[in-house]
View 1 (spheres, rainbow, N blue to C red):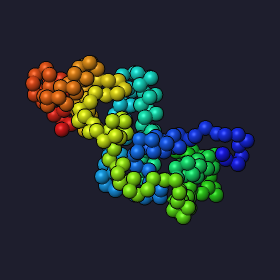
View 2 (cartoon, rainbow, N blue to C red; view 1 turned 90 degrees about the vertical axis):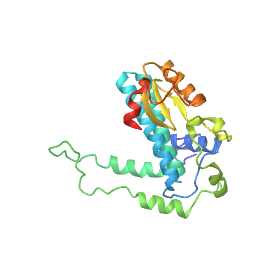
View 3 (cartoon, rainbow, N blue to C red; view 1 turned 180 degrees about the horizontal axis):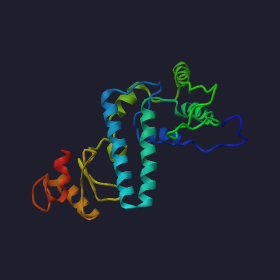
View 4 (tube, rainbow, N blue to C red; view 1 turned 90 degrees about the horizontal axis):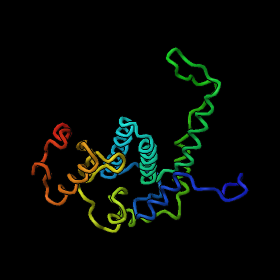
Length: 225
């Protein structure tokens, strides 16, 4: 509970993502840190995957998929902050303070809002210093972090339990996209075809339409590979 609220409050989006990481035994670091290269690569892959699905929904004019994709994009971005041990809500409050303090500034010829006199930038470094000095006691232990590292949130509970996620899968938003190891490799004519190709590639290592890969089902693959 925050002191200026009289009753219980709803969790923030960042707190929701922290709870998700803990429930799925994903990485939750107690102190702010730059991510190790392997963790950073995995987080970038997740962010780009969600961004690609947002772009696909925008292109298709699918508002529900677009809205869902934006939420998922924010979710995985916040998850990157969780893995980096960032005190995100405090960082957000400081950035919000600085942005709202730009009120009263003037616009330049290009339409950019100029900062008013006396404006101060967000003191993110100060927030991080405080977080390092008072690290959370209820974060996962370093051993648990090492055990959880590399589990893909999009792979679901089976991956969290130790099962290997499938290499190939159809997109989860609009459905016509095809992913290999989390990377967008093609756009199918229909969601059904995307699902068929993903299933066949996981089971047999070849496309069901022509018996090989790449094939005419996803001509984008050759350009993306």
